[in-house]
Image 1 (spheres, one colour):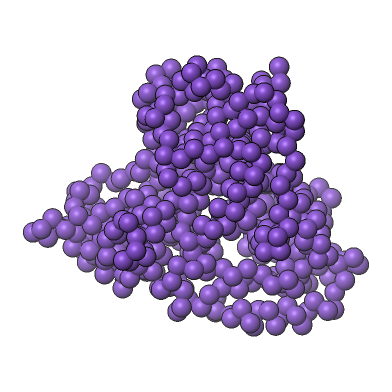
Image 2 (cartoon, rainbow, N blue to C red):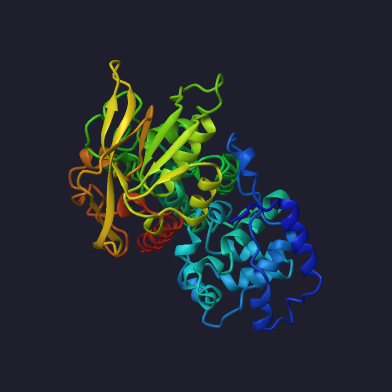
Length: 494
């Protein structure tokens, strides 16, 4: 896709908007409205800065995109949303220019719209069930729900229109939340609205979980996360940082000593996976977790000012094909790497990363080596990475995930010269909680086992998000936070 400047996209929308009336549009007229592309920074400019890539719709663009919604009576998009936002209603208000009403509708179901509008994989959730996309036989041509959500959330913030949700009378009950990521924040929001005394315990020195340490500034500015969390604080939620439940205080002590009536564990999955191949202990090999945490949470990219270093490399290889792999590769490019390879053993079609992220990575010069997998990391006499040995693959029959299984091609070994490797292969649950809480049931992957209400094997203790699901999306984690809040409210009201 050819790059189109923000000015040209804005001009195109301005020419169309005056000919339409959202009150009288027929379904045929709605389908004739062109999809509004997201304005972005020029790839030649953005590959060397950490500023947000997507610049956001203009007012006319957001109205046009919202008008593309057919306002289906059965609203299949709502069924595709893990927190069940009334999508047709908020799009209808946006189409009419009533942005305050639009954001209010979203916030009936979601407490983090500015975040979700930026990083949620709408194409595999609400957009996947959109009637427009199905009619076009292309999910990526569905109504761009997340882009409209982002606009109205930003409009609310930029126009000082953020309302602090009303809190019910104090219930006299105390709830502890372990982790301040999307799942924990969502549960805290709903529980505080119900009038409970809510305290969040965060192991890091900053709040936000994966939205702060995992997602780069160029995809999600940290100032936006801070503002979303500020609303919770104004509601009366207390947040205690540098507090690792399981170490600073054992989980059960929160109930027996600190007097909490219920606990929600939303600690995420922060233990990185490795391939187990030769050379993973060489200098220059970093898990994507460590690499991104240094860059995002501790701003290591701000050379000379940051309190933590980051490995400067000329040629980088990232192993994996998910969103985290895209984040690591694009970060490496911005930090100064001349050449960045994404090594993935299937084809682009099977990649779990968002289509938009892959497209942006290609625009920024990231090299994709498909049907390829590293089998050995090579080092020099000083124990530093200097190359990787890879093997070529072909696709066989589908595996349990539905994706075609990669099959190695014998004798296809070849070498790529690199001086840094970043495995991005997903995460397991951190064992701190399970090691210090023997009667907390976990599965073979270390994830906490819960019942249909989100309750763990310990009375009054619930869990959700990545610590239960493994690596999941922001919105799925939020959905579990909402469900757990409902369950906790029920037991506290008895």
